[in-house]
Length: 392
Image (cartoon, rainbow, N blue to C red; front, side):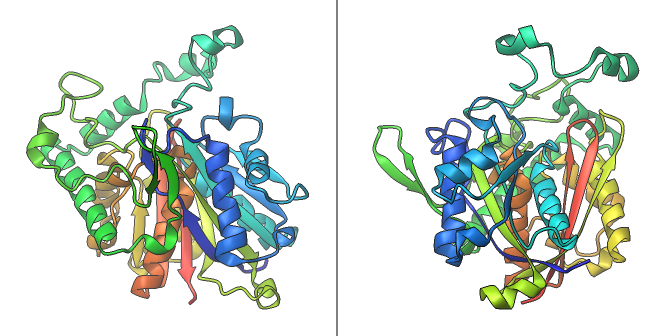
């Protein structure tokens, strides 16, 4: 088994749904980012890249037909470069990293790009499995699943169940959400994301050109009173609202993974070592897979919670990081999502794993941390966790 190193990771800013990036096709967004990573940011010969592995959840319309291959061609990369698209729901970006790392570790490839993309403005979540537009093809869930598990309700209702299980109040969830925006705004104002974000040219509401250089959904002026005024999103007496849930978003992220022995030859200076990825499965209505995946990842790496310096934990709903903290009791909770998370920065589904890796790598480098862990839960009761180690 060979060591796998991540040379660099870069992402677009995230645009809010129907916001600054909504006028751009997702394959074009990713293509521009891939070209930027290879040609401008690293300046390597594109021909040394052997594959592009892309996470994407809603693979329909502009995100269909293997967006990995279409995006790299749209971005001007050589037609000799192959691509494959994977879907592990919200864990798709982490799956892309894991598959790229596994190919390198096994000795089958030396240089692979792991990436992710999602335009939730142009391809609404769930449109690949439900809706009148595909009714003649059948729904995305087998009747056998309903017979086995009963009503497979929305993730929002699953989040309500999770919040009830850990007895989180509406006030606790709203307070966490406000903190996410505050941390994200502070990170932007301090320029902490600058070295990992490629600004995107976008269209303003009046049709003029503009540049988006920071995540569009961050709210500096948000208050607890505003959050408290929002109606529950999924049940009348519920605690989950649009304000304490991750924002639907548009964006892409990409990372270059290389076998350690090739770095000197290619003149590449790696930032982190890929340690491992762990996955887990639970009941389809569970949203605690990020907890079990974290434990599996630590066990696989031979590490303990106290060995991990920095964490990026799923913020699809505020209840998720709160449950993770309640269950695993990290000794340094201030090191969790210190630059904000999906509640403030947006949750472009297929891109979110690589996007979170961008943040984690940058945080490790800037704070001289050694180990970082990112973990997410996904639809249908799965979880994914990835551990990285800083080496530079």
